[in-house]
Image (spheres, rainbow, N blue to C red):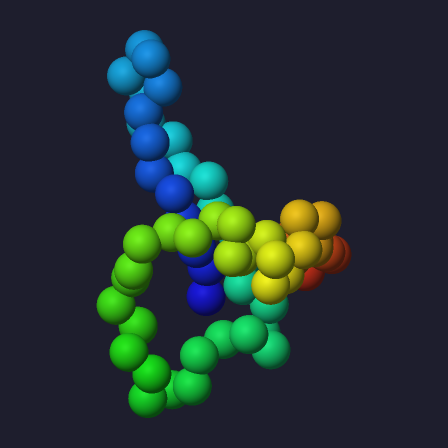
Length: 61
């Protein structure tokens, strides 16, 4: 599970910023997974600004 942000730079190049959600914070299987508005401040307060996940934490997947 991941959270992604898609944008274009001033030259029109598209890019994605992706953050892998720690497994212990994945929603239940029956949860509503429709995306909602990004609340970056709430995510930083919940997980911290320096939490390493995915390959940054030594995981290959």
